[in-house]
Length: 92
Image 1: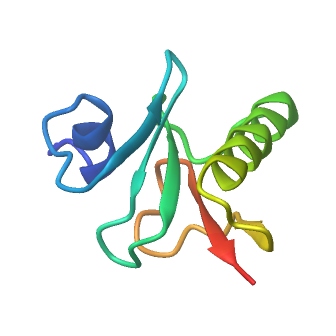
Image 2: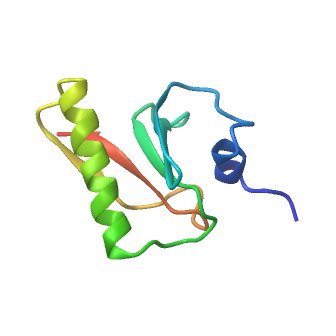
């Protein structure tokens, strides 16, 4: 079975856009499809727990402040890759 596109990104073999943040649990890069910040879990699973979702929101909050985005929301819908948890920061 081939490794998924987001697993390759997490393993830093497939980062083709700007990397904004990384820790042991998440990596934030610009999505190569929609060109908005995307936060990806480093664990290959379709969902994460509520505590991790709160952390994801907090990471986007810090990023939005850093790059001066005043109106935004977290888009939790996974469109293209449904078996590896990720979300996008969208401007309003």
